[in-house]
Structures are given as structure tokens and as C-alpha cells.
Image (tube, rainbow, N blue to C red; front, side, top):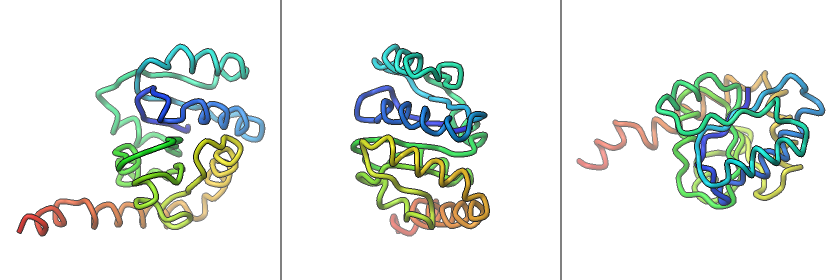
Length: 168
């Protein structure tokens, strides 16, 4: 189960995520994709999935109040943004112990060290994103180390102890 949590806006790169999903499904036909969030691109994303013949493998859940619970059930979280600040979805997945594949843009590059605390891909490149997703799915031997490193990094840099120390 591969999920993406982001408002349905062009900057979040959903079209690249859907294109990558179609490529991933060629090698991993049992994979399912979940998009959490809503916005003006919903019908366009549904149409794209239908055109690519993967609508039965892609589910759009809309806005949800239980995002943290959903993220913890993902095998992989993907963020395909073209531009990004400090993506909460990525940090939530890292704390939840879910491996992350994200585009190397903005604050994401500061959160993820490729191959150490997650996996990075160039932006606006669905083929590269699909390759990185495929690699991450097969890299099961390193998931525990990657997710442990990611969780420790987020807790050290953004956790309560760090916030209290900054205030003091």
C-alpha cells in the first residue's frame, strides 16, 4: 500500500505520482495506491488513473481527520511535489516508521538523506519516481535501519526536547 498525503493542487505533483503508479504496477501488480487530501484536481486525477487503466488500483480518500492512523498503515509514503517547504506528511511518516520516497525539492532535501533516512527522486520525472518507488519496495532489508534513522532524526530536530531547548 503506497500512499500520498497532499492537497490536490498542481504543485504537489499528483500527475507524476499517477504516472509512476502505472509504471510500478507493471512490476508490482498487487500494489495499491491511496491519495489522501482534496482539491481542485480531484476529477483530473481520477480521469488520469482511468486513462492509464489503473483506476481500480488508485483510491482517492479526500480530506481525512485520521491521517496519522492512515499513514501508519502505508508500506511506503510518496511525496511527488514540484516545490515544498517542510512537508508535514513526510515528517509524520518518518516518525511513524514508514519509509518515504520524495522528490528532492525544498525542505524535503533537508529532511531526507537518500538511502539513509528515506529515498529521493528528481521532481517532475515520473520514470525516476517509479524507479525509486520500485527500489524502495525491494529494499526491505534496509527498511528497519532507514526508518529508525528517520525517526531519530525527526525527534532530534523537531521533537519536544529540541523545542524546549530552543525556547530556553
